[in-house]
Image (cartoon, rainbow, N blue to C red; front, side, top):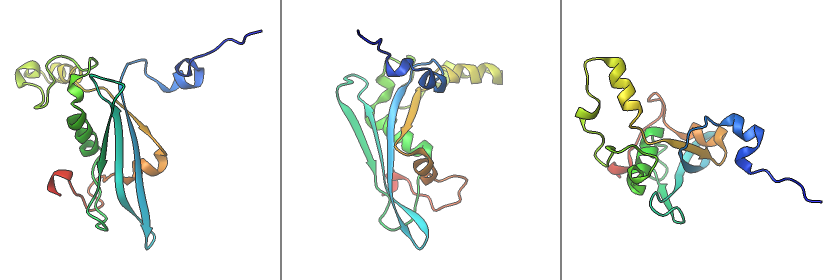
Length: 154
């Protein structure tokens, strides 16, 4: 007797977490140490399949200055991955999105609702998959509450 098999993505609990839209999965983890009761981020590690050859992973490690306590924003981390992996080359990204962004003529209109709708269609569809979300997501800078640092300034 053979048992029916179900793909992981077809499990009801997994389907309930999704939107039904395809996206580029970015794996994410952080390492941190606790110094004087505060978490100090040692590294952010992100990985994503290469958009032109999914058998290859593009890995990005962001190292804040040692012991600085500096953190980056989630936006900065994801843009670093988009740029390093050239995710605009993915078949999931609409034509017109490139390394320098989207030409204004593609979305500019005086009607704010039309502009927002046009821009929404030109996004890089990312899905962030954390190693341990409760700890990892809290390592990002938010609202200017912790010292910030950008990788390009290192």
